[in-house]
Length: 195
Image (cartoon, rainbow, N blue to C red; front, side):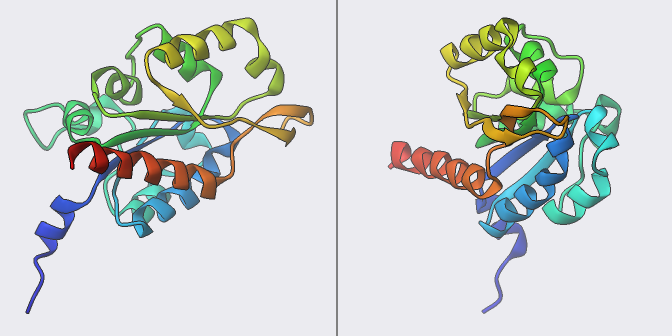
């Protein structure tokens, strides 16, 4: 008996993977691959700065879906692609997330598709920050994290260790396997709420 590939795709959980302009962006390739292997429909949305660290083609190949980098990528349909993704998402996972993105999200800015999806989605949001330790510890960043937590956003990390900038401290992206595990937990939790 033949299986219907379209039906299989429709039954998979939709994970929107946001990637921002951190040196840790290269780890999003492994994360996209893991999420796909877990059986999820992975849609990558990159900020312009993220494309300086890893190519959209790499993430498109690993996710098996087009990568959104701009509002102008949305030419297939009359309905804005970022709103479609916001509606379809079972989880918005942003890894890595920069201090700049946290500030945008905390203040409701939507100048690029990733921030607009974060504003429009009703799916759970999981953020894995990655930045210089001084930036992470800055009161402005901590205020933004607190604001987002109060709105129900979940954070994983950052981890302590040697940072790309040469400093040691908190700011490293959390382990990719653990991020994928937490994402899977949040997706399964939704099934338990429905059951």
